[in-house]
Length: 274
Image 1 (spheres, rainbow, N blue to C red):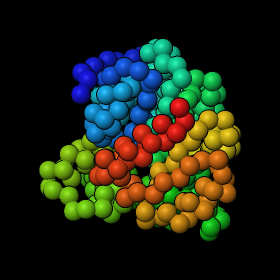
Image 2 (image 1 turned 120 degrees about the horizontal axis):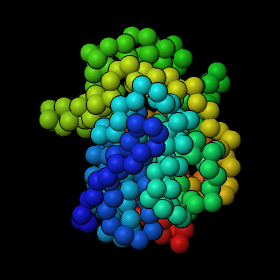
Image 3 (image 1 turned 120 degrees about the vertical axis):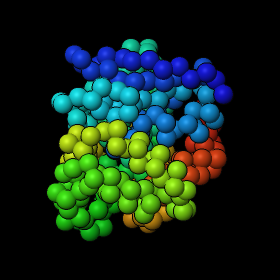
């Protein structure tokens, strides 16, 4: 594996994002989901850095980036991404967003366009989180989402319980070893609960259907969705963004649990678009 180099990039007054790079070639940029960090993409860094310049980012208030009292929303995360890519002189990039990291990518596209984008990979996230339409692919029922916000994300113990349940019930399909579960929970808890609640509400009230549609018409787009909601996700995606390629694999964190299969799917998609 190529040497992983870490650096900090200032995106706002007093706010620095932690960024790691490995390899050389055409750039691939990975953005983690809600409260997670660069570390979840270790298998992707190892695989893709053999042929590409791989960049992974801790978003604002995640991991080793600055914990900021402002800008904990996906509009700001989108502009943060623009500043990081400019600072690193990234051009003709493939952007890979996981979960709420997809919102960062769509917001980047909304603000900065697609001139510097070669291809897009979205991992298991609908472009609109909530809907009154029962046939839409959504993050969950409104009452359930409200309960998470009002019950779990009000203190550290609630956040810990929520993320632990989400990891074991939605993100990973196999039974985790205790140390694996602890590591994953600790990744998330680097973001304090009072910031996590801001990010959660911002993500749940986002609507990037227009950006998803326009982007997939302009650049090659792959969507990898989890098995547990594959039917609604596939049907919804085919209707909204028919130009996108869709693959179904594992749970919400399939890129980590089934890294070999996931990496091969993505590599195959990149090869098709050359």
